[in-house]
Image (cartoon, rainbow, N blue to C red; front, side):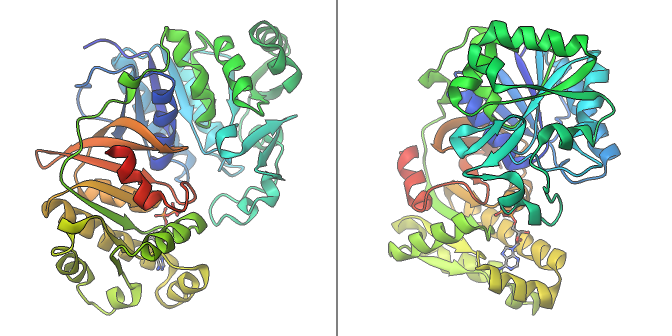
Length: 420
Ligand code: ADP
């Protein structure tokens, strides 16, 4: 097997797919693995993204998982390592972005890396070290209220400095706008000042494409998914349809959704308004002991031949809060995830070979229930969301894992058209 060029470690599941999607669009053939594989890679690709679930675990656990992934990627010959986190820099003063970055730097024996969550295609821009989400600063974007990783400071230099012992600096937009030589000069200057990690300004894809060549041969890159668009060219690769080629799609079509995000609510409403069949999973019925999964599968079976069906627990914030108040946040989440995952497996057993899953946690549960350990990344449906191909129970399955707020309103119908 040819050694891989780029070895990537992602701190969550849909984030891994988002990164893989950007690499594919820039010309790399990419496989995403679910956790660290037991054995060697059995696919001929340019990059591998190892998807961990390390964003909100204890920092020591995140470090251990990430070092495991690093060792495996090095064994596959990875020439450069990319640590991928969320484009809203989701973390706390304890981590996990800082501690994982430091541990990877130590393991790779490197004294310098970059950090930036700029992803202009999705409205994430960094200027003078400050992260904007769309038109507003990070701390006004709603992320200040995140239950696990509230982001109350938009200054990424300060945010990163709070979670690492290394000195944090800034490669500002003035340098980035001038291109490779100016960026390299800035890196040299920062290094001379003893800076170990530099936040990078980027407000456009052009900025990221200028940054790419300056990162050639840097042992470790840490970033959201945006920086990926400028890296494949460093390995002599250019965008090509070959990179996203998947086996032809076959079989029946279905959507399962456990995401309650704003975008998903709109997508569910759009699918129903288009006259497509939809089944609602009611968490209170689940809690009462009803076999909702069996009911959903019995409902779906006769409909599948006529086109895609939707099974969803997606609900508006008021309804979710009410369920959570009655069942508890975690218990409700787990119960719903387990049910949706059982339904996903049942749909595949009934001949579904094209499956859309909406929701990050929901995707994790479904992939686990389907015993999927790796996925080949295919064409993009919307920014951050590609079709993938996996093998489950000996048969091929096309699936797409949509994180909550990604995708246009018509995503649930459009996605099947993209695949066709
Ligand atoms: P997103 O990507 O939109 O954040 P996730 O799947 O990551 O979606 O998270 C949604 C969480 O909400 C899951 O744990 C899911 O089981 C839970 N959930 C889904 N529907 C409901 C509901 N109707 N009431 C309460 N919790 C729900």
